[in-house]
Amino acid sequence: MNNLSLIGRLTRDPETRFTQSGKSITSFSVAYDVGWGDKKRAVFLDCKIWGERGENLAKFVGKGHRVGLVGSLDQEEWADKETGEKKKKFVFDVRDFTLIERKAPDDEPRQDRPAIQPTTRRAPPPETIQHPEPMADGMADENIPF
Image (cartoon, rainbow, N blue to C red):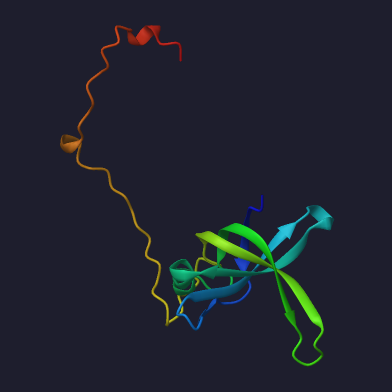
């Protein structure tokens, strides 16, 4: 089983590219902390996310934003163009993401990206709330054990 979840901050803005067949792939990197106290250190991990989710990530998230990521760890292999030497690196293949926070309260959205607008939920007026009928199980409220 290969399933990884982490929370980290983007260390660079996401970049979206398209394959020859038209599929999009968005690449970015995150930093997350491991350890505690004097032993705490940052780990940097390259990430990729395919398709529309990646395009959405690139629209709303940038360097410094904190995100939650879920996916799997993959190892990419290639040959160095100059030396022909085989190279490898681990890449986090992201399936889903959650925007946790902006990098700072005064963080201004980039001009080429739409601003994330906070939404507020309001309760409906009391007269429109429909209350369900009590269950007819024969048990009085004072006899419920919790």
